[in-house]
Image 1: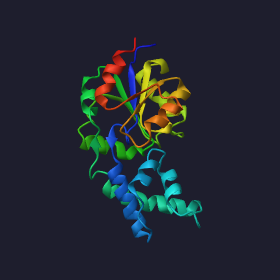
Image 2: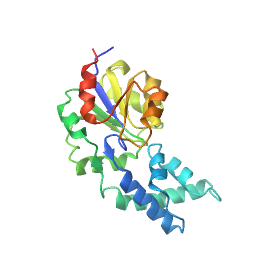
Image 3: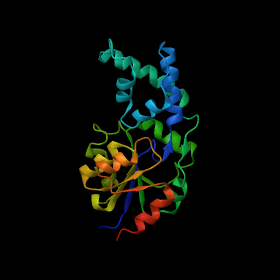
Image 4: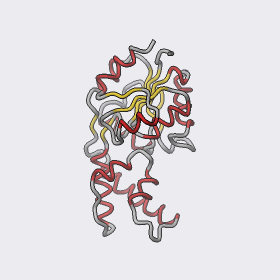
Length: 219
């Protein structure tokens, strides 16, 4: 196996626990529309596939044409803009890994790119030497399409074999498989790690404290 030169991280549910803010914003918006709030677990399960899928899955579909979807998207974003910096928190061991790991780091997320740098700045991670920070609207295609992964590798000057993808969702594992990289499923994210292993994740970790020792086993 090739030595890992680049670690690509998913964002929501992998590096940062953003679910409480997204759940709060979603239910604020639903209540403003006269709809019942949804259980946290239901909303959490939808995180990671992008805003449009979240809206399509959580909102009633009656009368939902493209114009109405765009209207809802704008209204929801206005709500999320007020909430997304309320309480993002790093997952256990993430800061330690990011400061101890001597290789390259990148973010490939399906979250809109404009939300990622402010959260990184709030958590004092913006200063780290990210080779790239890619959101769901940075390129025409989002995960699990290969495009954002290949862009991150090109920016770092590495091959898929030298890249490790760390994530908590289907797009991370399938995207890694599509480009020929190994992937690591996290136990603490928003999707079942057992399911991610069944999709083809290479390994899984309980916390980020496990990641550096795992990488060191790769020759």
